[in-house]
Image (cartoon, rainbow, N blue to C red; front, side, top):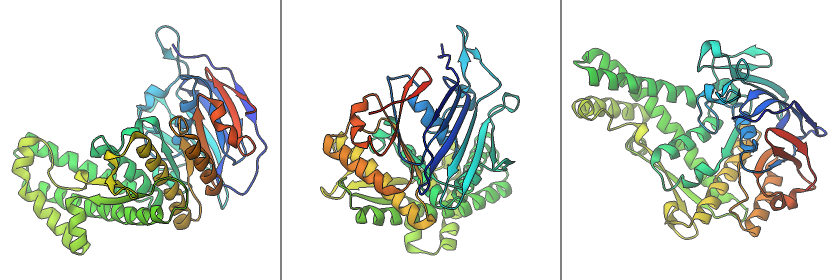
Length: 395
């Protein structure tokens, strides 16, 4: 059963000078029937009980960037539903926003039309766009959620997704390379599985995988090197992270030019066809790479750090990334920080709030305990969230 949210309009005075969302409109999104909000570009703090809809608002904001949002949900699962049978409450969800950037105000609209299924529609300044990658060309967004607390101890796929989103904020073309590589990877696996495969078509797919795969690895490698340097230069009180990229293709790029690495990958893919057909996988390629993270002060890998240290490392990486994107693109990304303060001690909470004041972009923070955000009471906009209803509050 989904909450029946009333139309909600809340307004804060709009201020210039920072990157941020100044208007946000939701329709039939999760437990929000309709919400219309006006903000300044200062931080936004959302507080309320679990299940109230705080993360839903962050998820809506995450759809201002390419992909399936911070939950990775099916688009149809986001539609607001009502009644015992959870029937659709409307004709698909929509998110619209005005985002103030360093150069101009950008109007973004996105949503799902049930008539076209699981494809997301996107408009920028009223015009439809062919690719969601156009969103990241306008502004960046990065997020941390509680599900990412195990990033360093779970498998490498989550770390690759995390890294690829960071790379995307620095190089908008990265998304199309990953999509092309993944499509060729799936097609090659299908041909090997169904067999006998046409060797000419397999070779063409493997050449495509090599070209895109080496470009993906090179983009990741460049971003990790830059981010590692940004972490080393960070001046906040969070532990310093050391980052490097491990993988076969990345190793080749250390030793040879990109074109030679492409040739190596083509050769390796051809040599592994029999094994790949037997296992149903692909033994070599950037889909096997991993982001390794260490705790600089202790000289240990992140997976051996304490839970609190791992959380602090994630925050330090995101803050360093915001500084890096500002240096490379001229403006930092929006920050979506879900339940960010709950497991930080008072000293680290203070360090986080102080760091956010220097980022020069809007941060959205959620939590169940409003008192944890008291140091922000003169710097942030506070909203209380309950069953999809919003109310301005004073901390």
